[in-house]
Length: 252
Ligand SMILES: Nc1nc2c(ncn2[C@@H]2O[C@H](COP(=O)(O)OP(=O)(O)OP(=O)(O)O)[C@@H](O)[C@H]2O)c(=O)[nH]1
Ligand SMILES: [Mg+2]
Image (tube, rainbow, N blue to C red; front, side, top):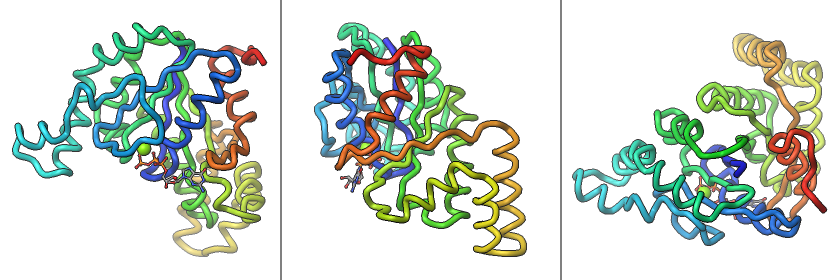
């Protein structure tokens, strides 16, 4: 089994992208299972094959530990790791070619507590990749773009797995997408845009972060995708395939 983790800030389109990738992979002849890792998820746009909510009930956590909704979400995120055997067994029993893991809404509850890195490290898989969603609505200025790039690097530091950058909800950007893709592909142009946007300490910070990311070699291709129009799905599935199958494309 090859594991695909979908990460990104709250509302960046993780669950809808999961629901869009499922039929896309199935149409290519690959068997695929969906795993919901968000104990607080309500109204998912797909029916998960494996669901953390079957093993961790948020209202029971609230009652048993006398917590409010936020405290319960934090504790449930920590308890996620204790259910990893159940998740692995449930996925193994399906025995899919791929499993897509839809991660909790608030990325800090997954990536910055111990359970997220533990889950990624301990998933029973032959290969894994992490999709990090750059929400189109959060990258409309040069410095915002750099701050989300920094977050993606920070997630890579936490999860320690290969990452694919996705510009999600691309249809919401309209013609502005050209500018964002220019920043993504050309660090010099992005630095010029940062200088146009602000001088002084903010420019110092943003340009230093940008240069650091570029120098580290972490900066990667950004694939613009829309789950509503399906734009970019061919490029995204090819990139996932390349990373997980070491160069072999999925069968057409
Ligand atoms: N226009 C547009 N809307 C999208 C797209 N993807 C997701 N959305 C919408 O954005 C909102 C958030 O999408 P979700 O898929 O729930 O995002 P999420 O990251 O799973 O959200 P949380 O788990 O709550 O953090 C929903 O209203 C979706 O319908 C897209 O590609 N285009
Ligand atoms: Mg979600």
